[in-house]
Amino acid sequence: MKYLLIGNWKSQGSLEEIHQFLSTVGRLSIPENVRPILCPPFVYLDLVKKRLPAGYGLCAQTCGVFPKGAFTGEVNASMIQDIGCGYVLIGHAERQESLDVLEKQMERAWEAGVVPIFCLGEEAPSAWYSLAKKISYLSSLPSSALFYVAYEPIWAIGGKTPPSCGYLSQAFQYLRAHLKHAQGFIYGGGVRPENLKEILDLNMLEGILVGQSSFQQAIWTMLLAILETHGRAQQKMTTR
Ligand code: PGA
Image (cartoon, rainbow, N blue to C red):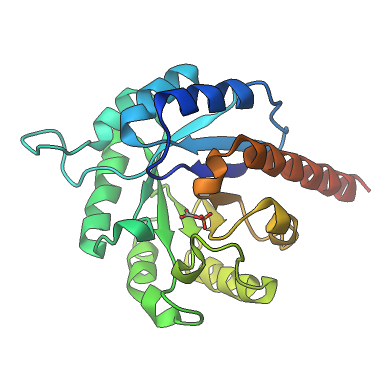
């Protein structure tokens, strides 16, 4: 399985910046072990789709709660699928949506054939109780439900330092034990080129989610390079 490198641009980018980013990034080779995925703001999704470098995936930052209809301003999951976008983030902490809303968005994503990446994270270090409702919802889903889990401790988002490896390892053990049928586990929150190797060395993840800094070409280039080195090292270990 390829390692997901998800770049969540959040609310940034202009036509010019996006053209520049894509033309630079389009020249980089993609490591064999990596599936890069870009999450631009809604208004740029279609543009990015049309210029998406080969091998890249596309992800929306959220989707509407309703199917198509009289819901002014809403972008529904069928529209996201219609333009060729394969993934959608559900419940990013910055959106502060209730679980009730997230459950409906998950339904809409599945109906439309878009793969949801469900975000969850505790509010403060070790505040595991704040995850309970989301975990109970996800674990109640049928094993046929296709979704990824993006673990993003709220207190680490936007910072420069993720939790310690010991902390992350405990968190992922807990999540994996409770959410056995998730398609994969992704980490986000303070991931930077300086700390990526450490996170990869945990060998507990299927992907990483990087916020605003992923829209910087230099950082994106470094992230790809680090993932490539990691992939090579892994390959060596398995062929030994
Ligand atoms: P960060 O954001 O990389 O800036 O911490 C991650 C996210 O919000 O998804």
